[in-house]
Image (cartoon, rainbow, N blue to C red):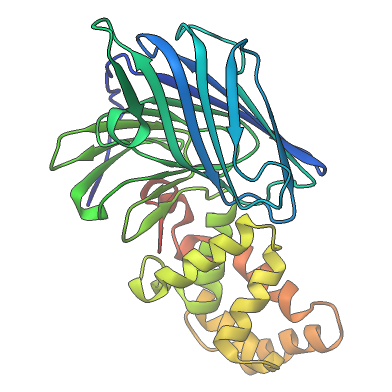
Length: 343
């Protein structure tokens, strides 16, 4: 895998466009699917979603006369929903109303949903049916709303635009077979060096390959995990393969709603052991930020702040995580371009 910087845009062919508009409240999550530019009349749509909240139920409606919807797990406890629509009479690919609206009740999604499958069935000019599959055909994918999605990249060039959630684009091979060009602000071109397929990726927080991934949300979970790594394990832990799995675990915790403070506490316990002393913590943080042991006076001062309750062990560690010494040590600004590696 090579990473380069550029400001050049990539021109793409006219591909089918899928728009996913999703919103969440404390009571429910609503996901709408729109399709356009499929190049023919649409006779069916199949969608698979996983990583839905346990204990929730679903309902499905559509705005097209003649659709016959089938929903797996409708009205039952969810983890996966498979939606299969076949059409008695086709609609054109310029149809703009929501072809499918999935409502997940009793569940505000706290971690990204996985779009595990997407097919459009069309009838071409020769009169034969064909399936346009996300994994093999290529799409323009647009995500709007606050719910994050994990989207599989196709085997051919595609255009993917993320929304405000933590959106991840997954590629079907190891990272070294792709070249990532950062355009800034979480925008990229990703080239498969074997097939020459080029994906244009806009506003995606994560790029994931079969071996590793890169997290770019430095104003969110990725930035918090990077700061914890630097303060608790040292700046050398950044993009060190020894910590890739731990980084992935930290991202998962934060994506699912665990607080920054609780992840800091878990990291401190992993590093120092349960029931660690103020002396051990202050010495660790001082060495990782200042690259030297604390003086006797500094050690006494900071341990006293903990014992007096001015700081808790976690709040002192958070102060260290967010300190400019730490963010400079880990080059947080540079990580927004190169990404934080995880597995």
